[in-house]
Figure (spheres, rainbow, N blue to C red):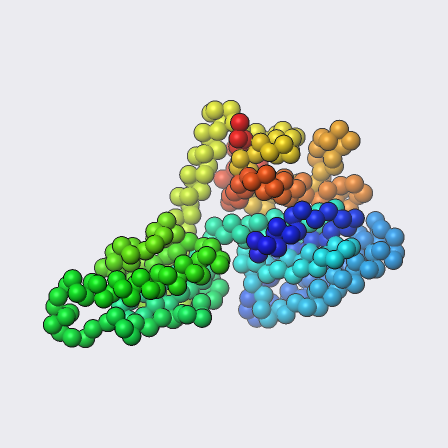
Length: 358
């Protein structure tokens, strides 16, 4: 997904179409996803024919239709994004976050859904562990995404003893267990390296102590679910893991909001759209805070100023469907950080704020 964002965020062309859709993993809900997608495609077709010449609009629609036809709605996650332009781009991406049903037709793609998915505040792994076996689960919020396969589950066939004499010798038993855990940790980190997410450990307290002792990257571990759940269904484990992860995320968000309030006190803070736009364009943006669900259409004037417009004006020529998405892309381009916060967390800042580098 990171590579997709890198590719899409710098593309500019005559017509970049982004479609986002809230989707569903299971029936009967996902049976309606195709109907919702068809409705969005009809809206896109109308806008294309209103804004572009017939042959051009038809060519873009053919690419969109082909992309939509490639979607198997039986494999939907929480969100679906389709990116098509008038040149050589056609991408379909499933994301584990709920998206709003929207269309954006601009000279650039609306990559915010992928940026949010990359940030993955509510995505995590659960390592289900005992002294004989290890399972690795991938989750988003309180939902199981999948049980990681490949090297997992890992069975402890070499570093476990049933010998009563060895078991009575605590140090010897600990060494055997930590050797097994060390092997598990290496496989876990391979998965995290490919798809970075924080890790929750689900195991008895004594095992958690030994795992932390040998862990190569303790910073990825965000908590502990204290119970042996090895034989339980993955969905049941995630249901109990989510409150622990949610509490961790809330604490992290409070810390980020604290950074914002400190910036207010030191003057390294902006909340005016034009001030934010100007600062980000020259690389002054350090952290852009965005309230989830906030969108703002705008016109960029000849003086490179923003003129904010109502959402019902997005179909008018020259209107950028969502200037916040452009801010996010520009901030990323200069190495800035983007933080998405829940509704209400940014009420004091009207939903958008920038902490500057200087």
